[in-house]
Length: 617
Image (tube, rainbow, N blue to C red; front, side, top):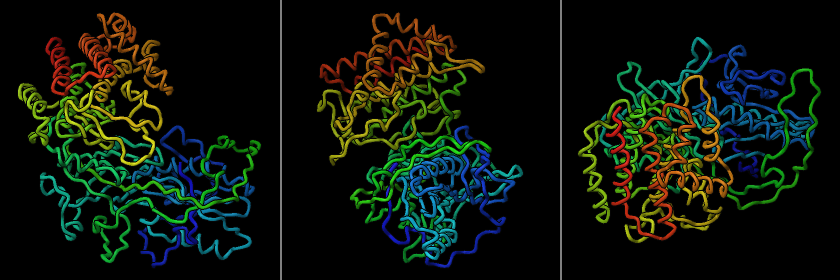
């Protein structure tokens, strides 16, 4: 996690304007929490105990979703690194429980030295130390400025409002521009007056909540109007501004079969500091919610990471644990830039459920087939998904209307014609969809220009490629083998192979209520999550090989899984034939054969179609 110190005297805490009057709340106060854990929804945060906590509510309702500011206290200045690790644990717990939080502030007091800390999606930013005894006025002013920040500057998303229910928990609502829902025609343009006219939606369910502090930190919510007449999916993510936004891509392919259907997207508003002085949550297009980009940063080598042993909090009455003393007093200027992230909102009309909730083997396979058809359509539009996984293929309980636009590239028309022929003869509504295009890439080659078909361009600069931005278990063998820093072209064949690993993973992972994975099933799951790339590649090669020559080895594996999905002939038929085809393509790529999408996609789709017609129930 990036950790840097700002040389600015105010460290972002000074509030030069008069803070607005807060909403009527219970008087917040700091609570000595050093001996008591805070009620939590997650096992990994059940036992952590910040020394002092500022809650938003009365103590009787204390919960991680009500924490405003944690403080960690240590005996010695040399315990600063240990304190930072503790604060990081608290920050993770807070982000995991507060879907409406952009960033948070915290403080650590080590000996007599106080340090203010900010956690956001770019990492950690902390102030210079202030000796409370030697500089009491400086500390008091900084601490008072922190407490007087308005809610937006405290890190709360202004689009959200919260009410406490009878159980003392937060019920969320979110305000979105009314113009976004006035028509289903894709648009991101509207006037300021329209943006101040909002519609309020209740948050009905959290579908996905990435718990990491840094990075995209994706949150997916099911939202609905109070009368339940309208329902949408809201995705909130911290996007990389150097990449095309997922919302813009979905806007361009609105109507494509098997793809999440676009309604609206926009970067979230931050605190308006421009001449417009907008007050509404969507009143300004310029002042977006983003991670601060600061100059004159300093770094302490000892604080560049938080790898230090800090045992879990001791139970009350136990002897206090001795912490390692680390010298964190030496700093140097750094040219290192903080990662730039912008908070973005995306609304889609498609409402899906995870593949694991499939009501039957047939529904599962139809959903995966539809996602492959959706992927095919995206490919024909010049887009590679690059993150095929079980979490990014969803089941639709009701079909979405679609009107497929024309292919944008004449060189892809043969592939597009074959896709349209398949779609025309499918004879049913859509069952599944492909979602989460945050890691997409534009296709830069036409058929015949690369030995493996179309691929994405590597980055334009010389940064090391992080090929693990996808989901490890579902990566193709070729991508798994790419070394850190090695430049490579991601191709559609990599994603096709990922669909195979998705089906095999699902067959091994399926469990009926009360059941546990068999040893054979767990072995396959372990193979697919092996963090040694070389070992994983060998195991995946062996698994593809098990599908060839009649697939006797894979048949034995599926039988040993001992669950109703793996033992069903529909699953075994698809896995054996798809695995053999993926094995053929993998060998073909190594031999530098030209594999054209107009031939590959129909072959893959045909496997699913024939199996579904052969085993209709």
